[in-house]
Image: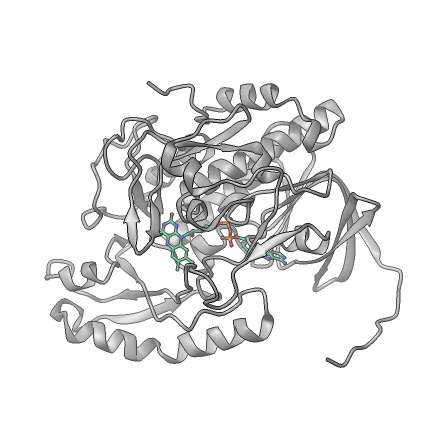
Length: 424
Ligand SMILES: Cc1cc2nc3c(=O)[nH]c(=O)nc-3n(C[C@H](O)[C@H](O)[C@H](O)COP(=O)(O)OP(=O)(O)OC[C@H]3O[C@@H](n4cnc5c(N)ncnc54)[C@H](O)[C@@H]3O)c2cc1C
């Protein structure tokens, strides 16, 4: 490929922070709230103008995996910020109806959440913005992470691009919650990435939102399709997919957007053919981003495995629990036969860099284990663990790999996060 040598230039420094969170998806927003609530001077940057990432920009249906979808389901494995968000969504009428989802229903109260909740994505944007703002974290939207500032193996900050141009932001701890491990990648952290269909992986999908359907009609065909829960009078539909592409390659990503978007009306037409309740329905929205399920995963100090998930393994450095099924385990949905396994803090720590924590879907894991913890409730719990650990590092003037993990765990419990203290 032809190359061009860009000229070095002076750029302005936007600010200096204890903690910089890159990306405001479910992991990043939870990390920022946790870090700021624990006293760290925190900045969160996000390429869109709202939080939620896949949840909002790619129009997800349900926040899954607050507890096991099947019995044994007595332990609510995601609490803390994830639970707070669901309870507050309920207060603002932001949850949808759950009739179409296979699960034991629990009465909605603290410590008693069901497996899954459909969300109104607009209320989710509103609430998460309010919570991040109230936490005291600074917010920089419409800002794209573009590089790291490094000295030896230590990060000094990041470089971003936005309407103001290219800027440097200095930070003591960086939390990479970009989903794609963009900061870790730029810092040279080793990673794994399944490209195309070279190995089994989860594919991507363009979701769309419809209104005008007959709510009293027979929506079973829509439910069979995997879609269905109604929130704010609308339904989000699992839309077209494209051949497996590489979501960290701009050209392939573009191709994926083009292919899925051009298929959308045919997709909806087919769905309507099987369902008279959709006769007067129409598509009212797609998100700005096709739903990308997986890209890079860092190689961390520990790699979570299928065995850990299936055995319900516990670790001394637990920062979150997960009870979510492996969604495509050798071709079937593999439910867990235990109350939930531990996610160790070491999965968030890249092998090479001292002051980088990775949170969200791109933590160090193998394919089947990812297909479990990827659900949004555990992803928020992982984010809360990352933000809390970062704040403890700042308090104790240390780096993530040397953090006093007992102190992090005590704080998590005090924040009502579940790290196994309520196991039977
Ligand atoms: C089609 C599909 C269906 C799914 N269905 C469900 C479901 O029903 N229930 C469920 O619980 N989970 C579901 N999931 C999984 C779940 O949505 C994701 O695993 C989870 O939301 C990932 O959260 P995250 O914060 O780790 O990453 P992301 O949501 O990817 O968030 C990353 C954030 O970083 C930002 N960002 C990325 N790069 C940059 C950059 N360079 N600069 C600035 N900002 C950047 C992004 O805009 C985004 O806000 C589904 C996922 C997909 C794609």
